[in-house]
Image (cartoon, rainbow, N blue to C red; front, side):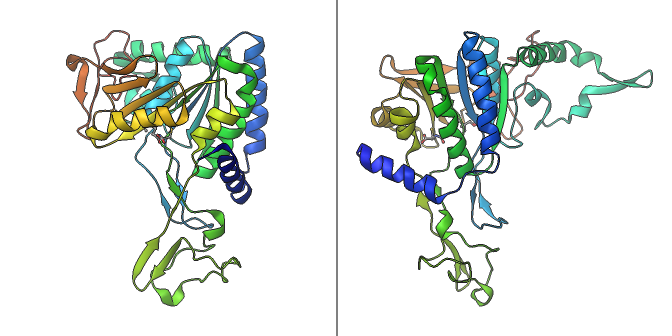
Length: 340
Ligand code: 9Z3
């Protein structure tokens, strides 16, 4: 796609899919955060995390989602903070957050880390050391104001936030990093093909386009035909190209590529790098993502990073993961810590 076609696809998308209600607030917070840290000489990274959803109805009852829990993004954000970056953490609402992730979405409840002592709630002895380690890092990020948490739910909210934050980071030039770990939908329902009300299970009660206020004559993207549900999605514009070429052309851009077929991973990561001409694609496979990733860049070619097998464990879901990374003592199981 040439740059004129890309610009027109982008402008069509943002004209036809309205911004989220909290966009203005997010822009104000991000502007203040970026300016303050740039003035203090800190590097700023935008970490995106978690999955975007695709609503099927305007008054949304049903939506398409993906598996991402936000482990990669939340974990990576902690490492960026540890290394002196200011982090804008743009995440799917209710997905994992830096630091609190150690105690949420776990097979254990956070209450399992507590006990009663002298009529007060205290942290159990066996978790004191590890929790103190996490708490200190969390407190330091709070004290220095180096973590800004923003959230999205839908693909459209994500793209609006990404575009506006990227434009705010543009003046930082190469000091701005984009670390795009969010699992982004490839297909979506455009606003002008979305039905207003809940999709009915029989044609008898189904809305037609006019009922939903649409006069364009287009068929609703999700509709019942006979007893079948037909979902006819459209491609999401290639926003990575817009980011690299337009929103923040001097920034360092790291994207992720997720596949399930091992024979496709490096091919597709290389293809993405060639297509978008950014700095690094980190490839991962669904089943092994917690302990191996491949870095594909024009400088280093293809480079695998693997967690040694004695530091992996099988999690509840059968996916192997890294043991001990969040534990200062190295003795305990840190749960689902990914390779990077
Ligand atoms: C990834 O590949 C992430 O590493 C995971 C992390 C989503 C696998 P979890 O949240 O999983 O730790 O459970 N993310 C990006 C995949 C993606 O959507 N890439 C797009 C693309 O390649 C946009 S950059 O086109």
